[in-house]
Image (cartoon, rainbow, N blue to C red):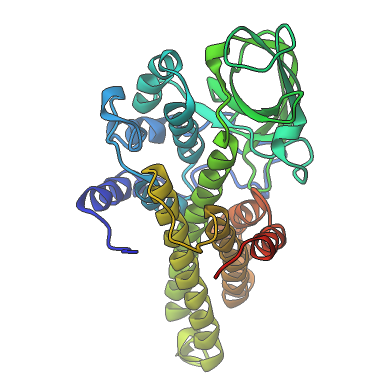
Length: 389
C-alpha cells in the first residue's frame, strides 16, 4: 500500500485547484434566507470550466476521450470541489459514466461516454431509495418484457426514488432497481422519457433535489446494466467520493476558523493564543487527518478493485474500508463545523459569512448515503462474518 500520488493524479488535483479556485462558496443565495431552492440549475459556467480542463473524463478510457485514471484521482478532484462547495454533479456524473464503462455494452458506451466526458451529457444517480433507510434498489422494480430476466429485449420500470441530486439538470439518471428474482440492476433512464415524473425537493444545503416516479417506463435492453455487483460497486464509489467532498469541506472550514481566531482579539490577545481554543482546533485537525487516511485507504482499495487486483489474504472486502472512511467522514465533518461555529461565536451564524453555508453542506454530506451509525452496523456485520486470520 503506497499513498504516494502519481504524476497524473497530482496533475489532476492541480487542474482542479485552478478550476475551482474561481468558485465562491457563497455564490448563490443563502439557504437560510431562501424559501425554495437556492438555484434552479447546476453551475453551468463552472461545469464548462471543468469540462475544458478535462476533469469530467478523468476515469474514462482514452478511446472515449478520457484520461484512464483511477478513483484516487477522482477523490483528489472532489476534495478540491468540496473546499468551495462546487455546485456541479462531478461525483454523480463521473461515477455513472464509469459504471457504464465498466458494466455496460459497447452500444451504450459509445452513446453515452464521449458526451459525458465533454460535459455535453450530464448524468446523475438515484442512490437513496424511497425512504433513505431501505436499500435503494428495492424502491424500483425492473422486469423484462415477457417476464424473464436477461440482457436482451425491452425492460419495464415501476417505482419511486427520492432525493435524487441534480435530477432536474441531468440528461439521464442511473437508477438502481430489483428484478422479480431479487437481483439488483441499474437502468440509465432519460429524464424526459414517457412515464418519468420529477417532483421538486429541497436538500439541507438548499440545493434542488427530485423525487422520481417511474410509471411503466420502457427501456431498451442495452440501457440496462445487469452484471452482478454493479450497483454495489457504484454505491462504494459514491460513498468514497462523498468522503472526499467532506474532507475538502472540513479542511476549508478549519482554515477559515484558523484565520478568524488569529485575527479576532479578546482581552487584547488573538483568540488563537488561548489554550482552550488551540486544543479544540488541534482536535479537529486530528479528525481531518483521520478522515484523510481512511479516505485514501478506501480509494486505494477501489482503485485496486478497478484494476481487478486480488485482495490481500484475510483482508476485509472493499465494503469494510468504505464503511470506515464514511464513519470518520460523517463524524469528523460534523465535529469540525460544530467547533468552527463555537469558535466563531455569533459571527458564525451571519448569513453574509460563508460558514453557515459550509455547516448546511456538512450536514447534507454527513447523512448522505448513510450516517455513521449505519456504516458502523454494516462494519460490525462484516467483522462478524469475515474470518480475519
